[in-house]
Image 1: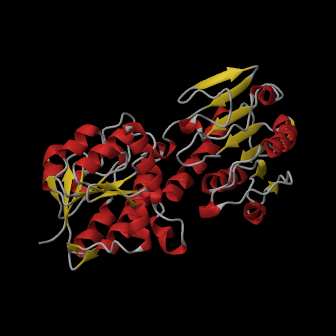
Image 2: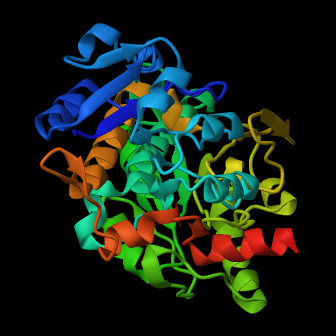
Length: 377
């Protein structure tokens, strides 16, 4: 019997993405899967129901979940959605287990196999499945545009009849995928860009984009492509050097995040107060508490003339391409588990095993298991 893959409409307020795109639906159909799509699921991403060829359209999420072997989602399933899943079925999407341990418990207790896209191992073979990176690229691009929109200055140098206008100076803190996209976009807009990251490996990437690398003399490379947490002495040295560059910047874009933990504080109030009036901070880490002490998630505030913007769910601001990229990530992961139209996951496979949050009534991700068991005690 062919695998039945269901895609419901996202229910989180403001979420415009969808876990399926028309081209991905065609690929899954060729692999032998049956696609069940809730009507209007792609409306926020401007994918009309008619754009999905040879799919089964249903009127409600309840119908989609009831028929599914595998459910694909963007946002973590709500408790209500978990209750609609058939016992023994699979769900794939972002799970945010550190924020929703009670939902992990529920999936465990209902024998749901949950694969978390944020747990996909960061190895070469899994790059095409890395949804964290694909969505971070969207966020970094959009962050530079948000900064340009909020800034009271031009980004590029302009030579006009009224004289020459110097380009804006943009400082990007964090040179991961989001940071690199922010750098590239700010450069395309004509700004002078410099960037800082505690990981020494990012220097060449920053320089290759035409930006200046800020060196504070600290290396904090860690496994999995992330940075380790700095000790107090390192933090003090980092703050001293960064403060000098922040004070001169017209725009600061912060992107530093640690999965499952509060975002590191990079811009304390005193540093913000050293910036010139009219300067702009776009804090992409707002959802994790913010890299700036003054950030208010989801709001734009002003402090001593400095504009501080804490956007939430930035990838959803570009839902067409964000959905296409995410749907391809899902397809590339799911395709490894489909054989002759049937679901046959290899649980010994490094990528599948590493992505599995719950399976067979157990919590497979050790940090989450400890979190849930701690709460239960």
